[in-house]
Length: 347
Image 1 (cartoon, rainbow, N blue to C red):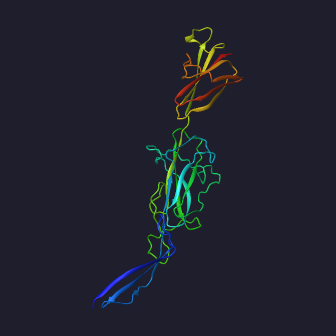
Image 2: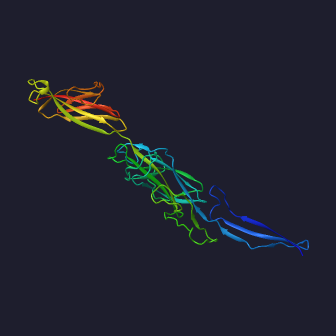
Image 3: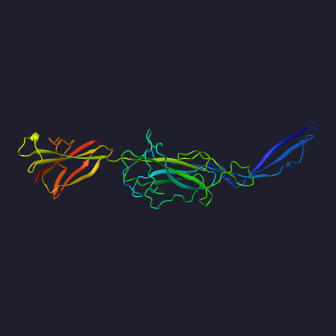
């Protein structure tokens, strides 16, 4: 007797959604099979198998990225959230269903990479780190609060930091934004079930994200992070004051002494070795009562007390109002010297 066996698999799917992350978690996958066969060339009644049902498990996968293409340039003394140059990140839920996360921002260790190739972190901007939903932080800091993402949803966030008053030209600080998976509607960090025995009747959790940039952010740890960086670009100003005797009315010019009636010239050298112009530069010098102010001017070269160098900058002024001499330098551009010459006589 010949038997001809054939099996047809029938799969019934209920409430299944297919998307970039795959079938939603908690969907029941129901499967049964029927056996058809012949006996003596005559088709027999089909035989149905039992029905097997299991739940689709939860694949947790989040991607954090920055949209900053280079270090964000700032100057010292900027306080959150008055700065309009935040670090910008996107957080994308790549899980197979709705997933909640909390966000945190952290400084990377010194010598860590920054956004600009070949440059490294040299300072922490740890004071008052804020994570905001808009570029002016109008809604305030959302660090550590539960945020729900629909499947495949991507959101943009802005990280602000107070830029230190003591920050100097060339300081760079890398900051990472981290998204951590939490239980639905809470701030409780989610637990991974990948090391546990599969339970077909329950929804197990499997972390599936890549490793990130923040310290300790490993692959499959339920969180992901990316870095951006601040770079301080400012003026670096050195101020050097000197004096010389122009004449004393008795000695030769070369041998003039600082006696009553002598003319003494002060020089104040302003040197900008930074990466940004110094604007609105103004210097005040209180003359001692033993001196009488004669005149002042500002020139566009390094100081030479005996023989003033460079050309007079007409737009820059030196004024006197007892006892103060005020030198208004205006803008001292990058890589330039300017010199204020102040002529006095000894009473």
